[in-house]
Length: 90
Length: 185
Image 1: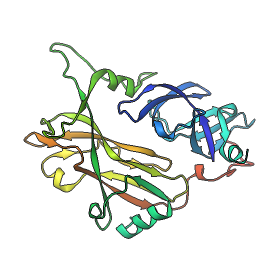
Image 2 (image 1 turned 45 degrees about the horizontal axis):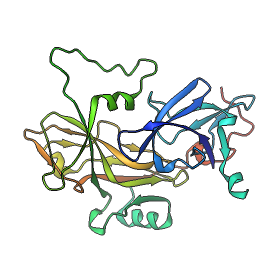
Image 3 (image 1 turned 60 degrees about the vertical axis):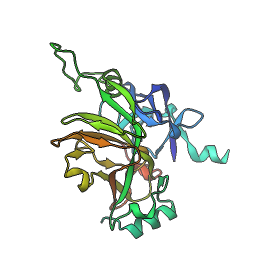
Image 4 (image 1 turned 90 degrees about the vertical axis):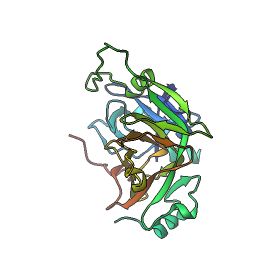
C-alpha cells in the first residue's frame, strides 16, 4: 500500500474530523477525513495508484474520501507518495 | 450479493472490514446491522429575513465543509431530553460507530434508513449512501424530518443500518503495479 502526503488545514464538522489539503498537479484540493487515519508523518493510506502518466511523474490516486469539489481520483506528483511497505521494512 | 448476518460477523472476525465499537448481537438482522446516533449534531441557522442566499457548488474553489461550518452550529444532544427535529429541517449527524472498509476486502457498504423511522418521516441520507473501500470514519448522516410532527432524536438510538455487498473483484487501488507498462490517456 502507499500513502499520500496531506496538510492539515483545520477541524471538520465533527470532533473526529480533520480538513486536509492534498497537493495535486492542478493545485491543492481539500477533503475531510477522520483524524485517526492521518499518520504522524501527515500521510494517509490510498491503496495503490490506479494510473500514471507517460513520464511516471504524476500518479492517479483514489482518495479515502470525496474532495470538497466532488472528485474521488486526482493526479498527484510522485513526490507526494510514500511506499508504506518500504516504511515497514525500514 | 448481500452479506447475511453470519457473513458480516465472519468478515468482522477475519478483519476484512471493521466496525468499532462492535454492534451487539441484537443489532443484526438477516442482512443488515444497525448503527447508532452520536451526540454531535450540526444545525443550520435560519437565514435572516429578507436575505437572499444560494449555494453554488459549481463555483471553482467551492468548499462544502467551510460553507457548512459557516452556516451551522454544533449542538450536543441532551442526554435526558434528546433533540426535537422540526418538520422539514435538515441537520447533520454521525454514527457512534467507526466503519473501516479495507481496500482489498471485496466488499462495499451502503447506509440505509430504518423502516421504523421512515414511517414517521425520518430520512438519514440524501442520495449518497455508498461506503467505498478505503473508507474509515464514523458515517455522516444527512438527517431530515419529512413527517407531520417533530421527531425526537436521542443519543445512542438506532439511526441507520448498513448493508454489505460483495463486489465482483477488487478495485484498481487494491492492486500493486497493476498499470505497469500502461499509460493513462
